[in-house]
Length: 361
Image (cartoon, rainbow, N blue to C red; front, side, top):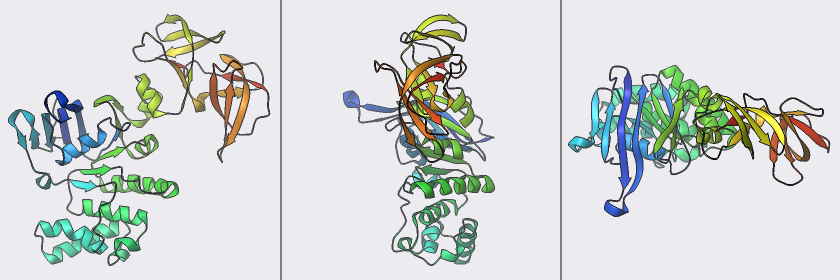
C-alpha cells in the first residue's frame, strides 16, 4: 500500500496480529491495510470476531501486532520488521472506550483534566483548556458533578471531552454509543457526527451497527475474518456491494432459492419456483449462486406486475411508520418480506422484484 504521510493522519500497512504462538497461534488480523485522512471519520464495521476492535487496539498500542507498520502522521509507531513498538502513552491518541472508563470519585472537571495533569501542564492552562472543551460539548455547567450524577449520554460526552482535551491527531472510538438506550443512541449519533464535523476531527470508530456506521462515518471498512472485505463511502457500500458478505451484512435482505437460466454480462435470467425473472449479476459469482433483494425494494401489488412472483400473505407486523409483511409459498420453499404503508388483507399478492435490485452473487 502506497503511503501518503502528508495527507494521512493514520496509515496501517499489511498488519498481521495473532494470539498465542506456534501450532496454537490464532490469527486475528491477516494483512490489513488502511488509512485515515485529516478530517475524515472511518468506521470499522463487522461481526464479532472479525478483528475490528483488535485493529483499533493495535493502533492505540494496546495490542502487539506481529508484522506490518503503523504510522500516525509522520511518526512510525510500529514496525514489525524492526521489532519496534512505541508505547501507548507516547502515541498521543484520544481514546473513548465502550464503558466510558470514568473515574467515579473524580468530578467531570478532574476526569477531563487527568491527561493534562499527567503531561505536567500548568494549572491555569489546564483550567482554560478543560473548560473550553466542556463548553464545546455542552457540559460547562456540569464541571463539578460526579459521573453517577449524570445520564449515560452526558457520561459519554465527558469521555469524549477527556479524549479531545489535549488535541490528539486522531481520536479512537470503541463502540461509543453501545451503552445508550435506543432513543438516546439516535440523539447521540447525530451529536457525535455534528461534533466531529464542527471540530474537524480525524476519527476511527469501531461499531457492529451498520446504521451507526453509515450515519457517522465518511468511509466504512467492513472486516470479515481478519481481512477487509470491502471499503467505501456508506452509500456505495449499501447500494453497490461487491460481495455477498457485504450485501448481507449491510442491509435487511430476502434470500431467494433460484436457478440461473442465462447470463449475459450483468444481465441474468433466473427461475424462482417456476417464475422467470430478470436480475443483475454482482461480484464474481460462485458455483452456488446466491440471489437476494433488500426488503425495502420489494413492491407489493394486488394485481399482476412485471418481474414479480405471486405469494400468499402469512402475517403483517406493525413497526410504527410502516408494516412489515411476510409472504410464504404453500410448500414453504419461499419466504419474502416486504414493507407496506398499510396493513394488508389476507390473500395472495404479486411481489415485484426490480431487476436492478435483484442481485445474483
